[in-house]
Image 1 (cartoon, rainbow, N blue to C red):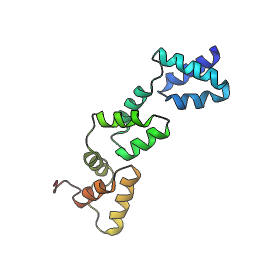
Image 2: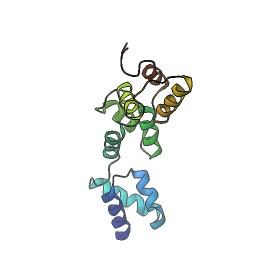
Image 3: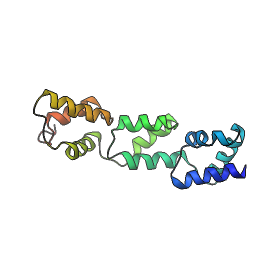
Image 4: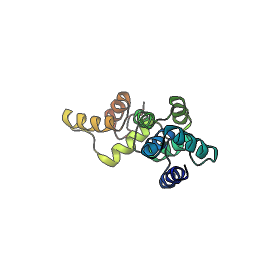
Length: 148
C-alpha cells in the first residue's frame, strides 16, 4: 500500500492527473480496492483534485483549442460532464471567435485566396475544435473588418 501511495505521489508530482488517469496508471501495481483507497486518501489530503485538473487544463489549452475540443479532451480524460461544463462556463477566456482569430493569425495571417485554401484553413480550425459557424465567420472576415 505504501509503494502504491508513493507511486501515485510521484505521478502527481510531475503533473496533475484526473482520478481516472491515476487509477489507470496504478492498475498494474495494485488491486482496485487498494487503488481506490489510495486515491481517496490523496483526495482527502488535496493532493489529487479533478476540479484543479480541469481548471489547469482549461487555462493551459484555451489559447490553442476551441471549446468543442476542450470539452472532448476533458471528457476523454475521465472528468465528470457536469464538472467539465461548469469549468468551461466560468473559465476566464476570450470567446471562441477571438481565440480562433488569434490562432488563425499565428498560422496563416492571410485570407484564403481560393476555395482550396479556404477548405485547408477551415480543416485546421475544425481540428482544433472550433465550431463551423465560428469558422465561417472568421474566414468570411479573417482580419476582423466585419465584426457583425
